[in-house]
Length: 475
Ligand code: AHR
Image 1 (cartoon, rainbow, N blue to C red):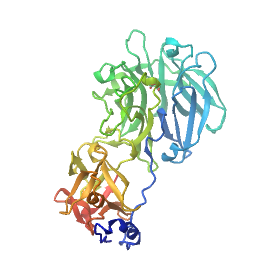
Image 2 (image 1 turned 90 degrees about the horizontal axis):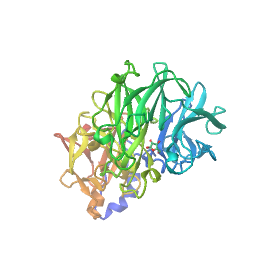
Image 3 (image 1 turned 180 degrees about the vertical axis):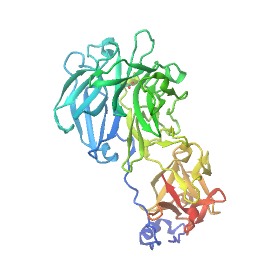
Image 4 (image 1 turned 90 degrees about the vertical axis):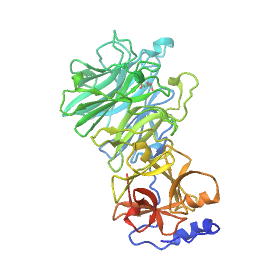
């Protein structure tokens, strides 16, 4: 395919693009699949998203008013953004569940849909933080339409502040993990695990897994809460949220061998550093209270909340802008989850590995484009609609929004800020060509007929579009 473009002819070319002859084996251009955009759902904090074996994704989470339990369902993750939202249950008019409702989680337990949540009374003052864990149960098979009634209160080891329970099954045993304040330990909450005998009854002694003591766990408040479990690569990973719920909120992680005794605290190793924190470059602040799911291709997805501004007026707990966000979850060579950074608002980014050498990814080091495998965030690029008609796209690194890949006259490919010039508008336009047979994509440069982004002598350059060096595996 060739694009004979002069600067004058540039704008007119968008019409010509669609008439361009098909290249053998390549589509003219991808109509980008309408994947999820961040934020996925505004003002839904503490989000739990999971794909049930009925093929639907379910989403629940805290609402800013903390007065009701809600649920959404969709065939796709992206569809959760606009899916109708059912109100399953509202806080009571008085009593221990008449105030805050926090962090619901939906679970199917022995054929019954049950929502666990934390709740407190509405008496005002400090009493509203007399938070305990309760459950409601659905009377039928469809959680969206069934009738929900109170099942009762979770029996925990102490009559103290407890919240953020999650349920998981490992090797046929059902466990519950939760956050609780333990008498004699001066923290807001620590993490605990126990086997679950019945929905509201522990099957024996609880194990304390972690107490917030590290500097990044005790900023503002000494907090370890919101446990979430991921079983991958022969290990269990338990993420949790730490510190105050403002921009200092972050994720920590415990990991245990899949064959270890999960009720032995010594089985769990704590990452010394947080695994997921505020990122000013991508403008996501206070990422946390996560869950895990898989996308429609079965690839791991991290679900979490985060604000897109740093400074909060008033109590962060009463700030409504913790939005639900999603992003791909990758792994390091030893199978440990690599969280990278919160990727920021807009379409989800991708990574592009050279089909000629999988060790070489499209990456950048500051404004320098490189072919290599540096930190995850340096390899994530966001594709956005271009300015040469509907079939052109632009590529921007998530860490440098406002900078774009530009095809140089000299065959270079550089990262440039949007100068708003006609030359930038011409040279920052590419056409994404998918080669389904080879499972590769190419980015043909509209300003350089017959050329595409590729790897030459270990550098990111414009190469002949038909060369293998122009082929990338998107991930
Ligand atoms: O969002 C309400 C509470 O705030 C959640 O239960 C907890 O994880 C967070 O600190």
